[in-house]
Each structure stands twice: as C-alpha cells, then as structure tokens.
Length: 317
Ligand SMILES: NC(=O)c1ccc[n+]([C@@H]2O[C@H](COP(=O)([O-])OP(=O)(O)OC[C@H]3O[C@@H](n4cnc5c(N)ncnc54)[C@H](OP(=O)(O)O)[C@@H]3O)[C@@H](O)[C@H]2O)c1
Image 1 (cartoon, rainbow, N blue to C red):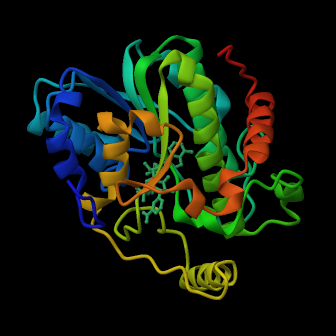
Image 2: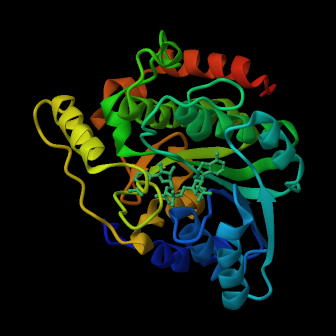
C-alpha cells in the first residue's frame, strides 16, 4: 500500500487487523472529536482485547467509550483519569494500567498557551504536558514491566518541531521571562522526537519499539480552541523565517486521515527495523532530510538525563 496525506487510520487498521485482535491499547488525550479518539475508534473496529483511555475529563471521553461499545461490544474499555500537568496524577494513572500493554499512544497535547503557564511541578506547561508527563508514563510502564517485548510506544509530535529544538540552556523559559507560546510548543514537540530516538535505542534489548508521529494539520479538533488568529499569524511568520523564507505549508487533513500516522506506527510489522523513526503521512521520514536539531544525539542524551531528573524516574534498561 502506498500512503498519502489522505490515507485514513481506518484503512491502515484494516490492513493490519491481525496486529489489533486480542491486543491492549493505551491512548492519552482521547476527548471526543480529537485525534486520540479517532485512533481509539480505528483500533476498536478489529477486536482488540482492551482499550484504555487516559483523559483529563470523563465527560469528554464518555462519548468515545459509548462509540466503542456501539462499534465493538466485546472490547473491554477503561477510563483512567489523569492530569498530565501533575506528575503525581501520572504516577497514579500508571498504577491503574494493567500488564500486557501492546501499544501506548502518547497523544495528548496542548498548543501555544498564550501566557506562561506552569505545571503543578513547576515546568512550562507544554514541555510538562506534551513531553515530561509522557516520558514519565512510558518509563513507569517499562519499569513496572507493563510494556514488554513486542510492545510499541508512539509519541505524537508535530511538524512544528522543525521550528525549535530542545532549548538545553533555557528549557523553562527563564521562569517566563523569555516565554514565546509557539517556541514552547515547538520545543515540546522536538522533545518528543528526541525522546523517541533515545527510547528506541535504550529499549532495543527489551524488544520495545518507539516511533514519533506527526498527524498532519487537522483543523476540527480542540487543539486550537484558545489560539487566536493573531497568534497563528505569528506562527506563520516564525515558521517562514525558520524555514529559510519558505512558508511551512501544510495541507489540511480530515480527522479520519489524522490518525493514520499513529495507527501505522502502532501496527505495521514491516517497521520493526525502523524503531526510533519520525513519521508523517504514515511514512518514515529519512533522518537525512530532518532538521539537525531533531537528529542531534547529544541533545537527545542531555534531554533524557534532564527528564529523568525532573520526573524522578530511572529505568535500568
Ligand atoms: N490537530 C492538529 O493539526 C495537530 C497537528 C500536529 C500535532 N498535533 C498533535 O496531536 C495531538 C492530539 O491533538 P488534537 O488535535 O486531537 O487536539 P485535542 O482535540 O485538543 O486533543 C488533545 C487532547 O489532550 C488532552 N489534554 C490536554 N491537556 C491535558 C492534561 N493536562 N491532562 C490530560 N489530558 C490533557 C485534551 O483533553 P481536554 O479535551 O480535556 O482538554 C485532549 O483530549 C496533540 O499532541 C497535538 O499536539 C495535532
């Protein structure tokens, strides 16, 4: 099958149905109408054993649980409440996840928060929610033996990562003084790409694979609800500047196509030798064509060490 920006997650799930049946999927950020919800529904169509949805608000996730029940009544579902802006909540959520997780999709995210916001633990909110919370969740599941040989961790990122890397000397934006809503979003998404390549290396001996997935531009989800037209204009300007004067044009995708990259990353057995890769349009992006700050192994190592310290987790790989 050749993958394009209109390939849907459902088409890919049909193709790899045998990788879904009987398996357990954990997805963060599955609010109704979101990419995470669409990803869950794509898996639900092929008799997984369990779908565990980690969400901030049960009322936003219950329509998704109902849709899964209507589509596939035999699938076990579970809602786990989590606030990814609070590491204690992430730890409590990890405790509620059973052993035998086949796929963890770290999908939840926030974008371009207008004012400098800190997580409960004092980290810039996008770095904290989009990256650190998911770093902790994946590492806890590894530490607790819940991700085992053959399991996959998919980290949802964004092409926005092209605009800014890991700001190793100012990752917390000098307590707000140097804050820029878009640079903070971009850093968090670059962190997810660097996290993925390190995790793939470290978890290789355990047989656990990891991929980062850019879903594409889907303008019907809740992500931009609080982002103004002025802020988008600012992002466009910044993106063009940082892209050598060329506007960073993205084709608008349907929600059905928005889950495609995560779904292929989660399922396709032919990707086994590509662990660590960054994917978009359900296709692996060659490392040579990526921005240097996204393939910088030194930055990836420093980010891993910092994250281990900030979230107090250290897995013995
Ligand atoms: N849509 C796009 O064009 C696009 C492009 C590139 C990358 N992405 C990435 O795709 C992922 C999904 O985004 P989306 O477009 O589907 O947006 P969305 O509809 O806003 O979904 C984001 C999800 O993350 C959850 N979330 C946010 N903060 C949280 C917290 N502190 N604790 C727990 N959950 C939290 C949201 O919960 P609530 O509903 O309760 O807020 C929601 O379920 C994100 O990582 C985003 O960065 C999206």
